[in-house]
Image 1 (cartoon, rainbow, N blue to C red):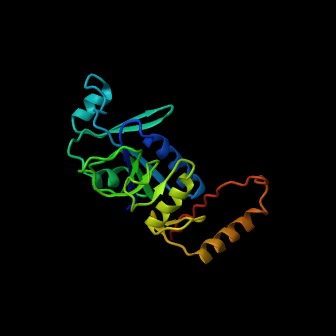
Image 2: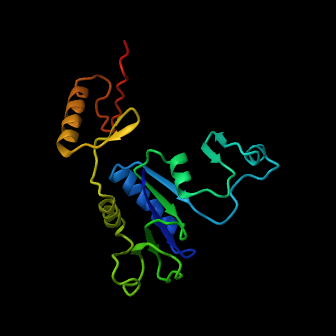
Length: 211
């Protein structure tokens, strides 16, 4: 299951900006598989007079596949957090939820305005005054990398430069094994033609041999 954290605050507090920066750091610099949910109180399903809206209304999961990507629509008003997690983010390391003040998640509060009393689970403050939750860690703009590292510690994780999946299940690796695999694969690839100067991520798939 992914680690899920809510980025919440009042309107125009900077939630989206922080989410974008954390996705960039967690997914790029730290190499995590990151998911993102924008939780809102508006209707998001296509109108019933559209093809996808009509199908979603019938209780069928609808996926819109266009030239720019894919959007999924599921008409179900009693979605639980676990439903969303299982359906859309089964293999992500972390999912950032923008909003979700009412969800049972650890929360990073963004901005200087105090939350209402019913917002529970705040464990850090971003871009807020020190007197707002003075016992909690505070992070300021330009400290997003520091916040990302702090989130990583809360997850009980460390930087991973090698990720191994076997049969769709992620396998935990210690530093020695990660370094061994990375060194072996990169060493073999250095002798291959056509990849000179391509200093990028490497994806290696070894299919099961049958028979």
